[in-house]
Length: 260
View (cartoon, rainbow, N blue to C red):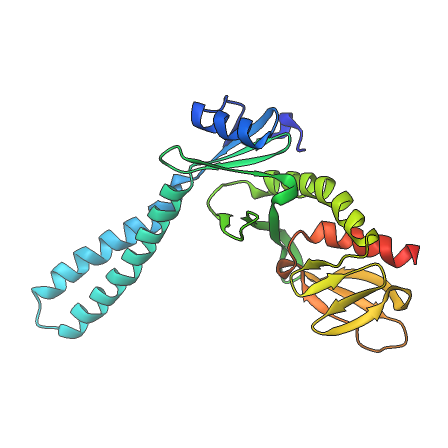
């Protein structure tokens, strides 16, 4: 988990509510670690733009220029939709609470949704940004889904994903890698989106290659490649953002590749 001393301003160690405590006890999530709060400032830009174009539309209605009225009305509708979308997102999500054995997403009405690490699906999009070759920082986006496939948290709502995202990934990997290894050893197939693995081979988009032919599992420019010995092209070059629980997949693939 991320060191407590390095937590951002949006994080706190405040105790969970009664509703959250009940969900935590039901799912056996253990002790509370950190709470991250949603960012209401996401409403500011679309709200201001919507108000500005409403004013322009009102002015345009009093003028004979119907083209101005139409353009301002259209822009008002667009930014109004953005405002309503941002308002809905900020109402839907209020907090992300991290516990020893899982997490809880709390909506604005205080209703919690709890999920243990072994049941959580995480998709990540981590991008390094450059301007004329000069590094401009790194952005993080994470999508969290529960065991039923329903989204628990969309990107962009809870600030500082660079703090809580890696912490969640580490916890999920620690919880799910032993489960995946045990399943493979029993002869089962474990799927990660469009890629599936078993103890003999890895399959991507209908094509299978035995582990003794996979030379390396490499990641470059946000895509993971499975290099097939003797082939010019890899078995697959899939975006990391398309692979649920990527770190579990990567660790499992490396283990199977090197132990075969």
